[in-house]
Length: 530
Image 1: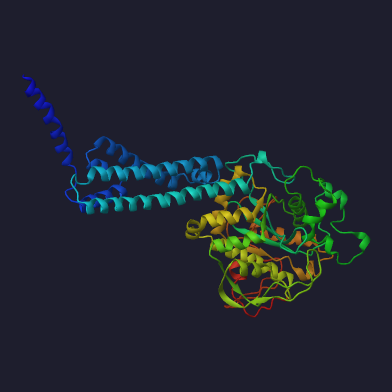
Image 2: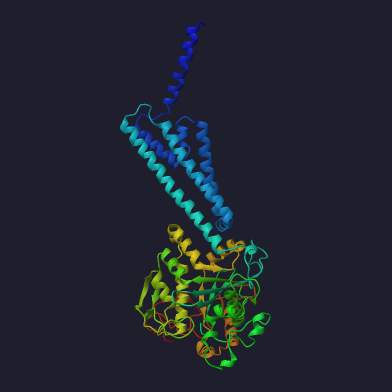
């Protein structure tokens, strides 16, 4: 073969390969744009149509495989997903995976368009194609960035609020025996909810809101028990060092049988640690541990964990969720102060009122005052509104709100919460929370008229009897087989101030249980003074 013939063969080969490549290209710019869109919706398809069969098949297989794995894990391994959501390390890995997937997706779209576009295009066609590809890349980059930021917000929230058992200290928290199933031997979980008021103009911190939530770990049925802020003589367990200091409860006998505001329940959080620093041993929140011990002894319940809510963070959380809907049965004051008691300012009138009405949508500011407004109203009515606020908050936590506002919710959560719940059992806590959302939430009426007409000398023994009777499984229609000797929970009752709602119902008797759907219904005949 002559040299000229060989040279001609070498020149001809590239032309054949280029012509084969051209057969994969779209004939028009609009067709190329359509195929590029398909490649974005089905990653890998554009590479296949562009002639990169092996690479296209690989990307397409990876894409379909990831979708199938995600669907399988989401439907059959919910525990694994929950564990991921509350593990800072796994959340960091998930953030990196989201970013890499986004970059890979964008590269696939760009590479597909380069393979599919016509060889000869007008300037307008090239510009249209480039703009469309840029738009597609932007459409991929935005949700990818939001997803990565959301995962990092979740990681920041978990790391800020929940500490691992080894990295935190508590004088009252139970040891975690089985992190994968912590409720295996606990028929009921008792959680102390504290509303801490350390606002502007107040010295120190007072816990105006003290509620115990007793949760059936099998069904999620929850009983809420409100403690009055002005209770005196709060007892301590006999094996606690505080029992030696206050054998007759938290009060000062030298002052006599009179109201002692500095010995009210809402003053314990601040005053006991000040008077006896370190008495409970190593703890990250001595005030919360003090209230936990006192509430346990007063109510006859072993309280496992506490969640402390900062009122400023509570307002932000409500706003992040888009507000809550409540029934306002009487005018509720905004602001106002009697000028007496721990943490009080000088006396002043309310700046306004939340007017009565059914199904009122409240933003964070008004929801906060709905829960805590007390000027001219009774303490039981305030406790009732606090329970209804919690009930409304649980009902407002919809998947749509969580998806659309999660970064704001996480940011508010960092300022909102303080707790001794360890990271190790967070997956189990989330599962229990899902049960609570779909279960019965009720209130236990502790019979104010009989057991604490004033805060000077509450009858804690009588209250304990009411609680044990109310959480006993015998009256509950839902079979709660395990005997709840240690930690019971059932549907509680609304306070003695609650009257029947629109369709007449029997008035709740003291010590009975009333569903919060009924307790929080609209009843304009109420005055809030009972």
